[in-house]
Image 1: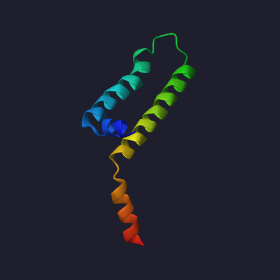
Image 2 (image 1 turned 30 degrees about the horizontal axis):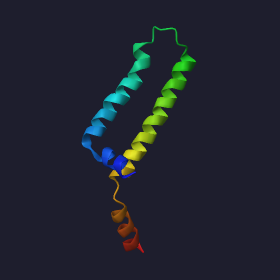
Image 3 (image 1 turned 90 degrees about the horizontal axis):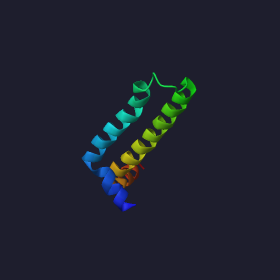
Image 4 (image 1 turned 120 degrees about the vertical axis):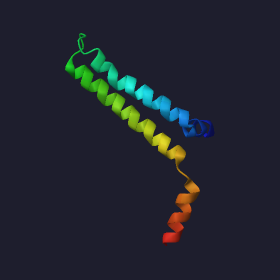
Length: 77
């Protein structure tokens, strides 16, 4: 788990994620003249969108500081 956290903290990972997501979202529009139906394209975009949200969640968790959050909640009490 610590290895994944280190990978997610690299700024290069965010740049690679941006390029990867751009390619994933751009693919249906590039191949719009192809034989795929609108329903398939809708499902594809929904699955890619959900995967990006999960990746961004893990990225935010990797950048979060649990000690800072813990001390902040104690100071509010």
